[in-house]
Length: 122
Image (cartoon, rainbow, N blue to C red; front, side, top):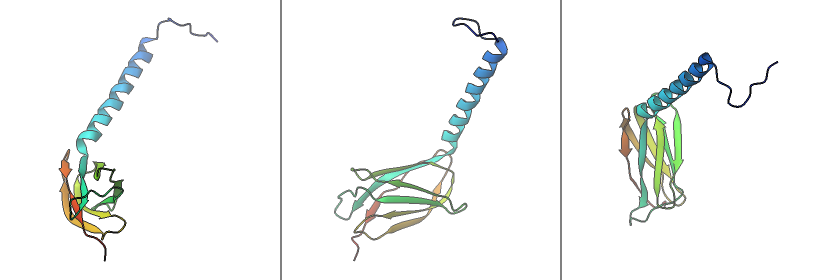
């Protein structure tokens, strides 16, 4: 068995195969980004104070698939990669009542902002 030396030429079919593979990977990645929607927003209380570590769940009404996220220390959240469709979005946080919004329609490539104001639990 012959060992390939450093600097030896790569065969044309192998090089072509590698280039085509990379192109296919890149186009699939670009298509997935373009077809998916992103949901972002801020979660705060009635006084305007942000709520860190709030749990956000986006449920696709058509498929039942749930994607989740959590707010950061600034009360911001992002749920990327959502297929277009109709969603119910819920937010839960310790000490607060769960907030749900339904009939949130996300379209191809949408960058939708959805802010929540939570009520203190009773």
